[in-house]
Image (cartoon, rainbow, N blue to C red):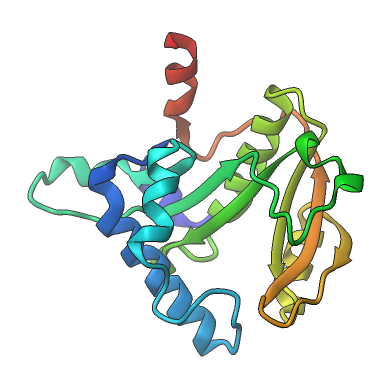
Length: 200
């Protein structure tokens, strides 16, 4: 585990409207990094607020925070990582034969560059997998860039199986993956969403 996660306590929470600028910055930085690697998964410059606001409003966008940032109230630190998790199966990719309602779907998974290699992406995937299990669903699913074998290999190494690739000319994504849900223990960060569910 990267020393960042040992020296900086992390917590996962739902994104709030005030988090929009930080999320947009994180996604734009990630998109720029992807483009520098020759990957066209996301639009260069990231996503417009019209793409991210609905995720916040629907309460399906989650942020990983460095808890030490709260010691300096003047610093508007962007999130360490972000992930959206919902039951929205992209109809261009997932067909009725896939039983779209049998899964939760990952979108907008990004880890800030200073935290790259710290295992946070793995931990968020495990958390999403456990969330699908808790919801009584058998699968965790995602789609990623058709032309990015490195990213596809990353998901395969983390228990995802390639379902198929849907090659649509207007979509850079289309490599479909799924992983069986399971109750995976999370130790890398505090899950503040658990308390939220208990109090609901």
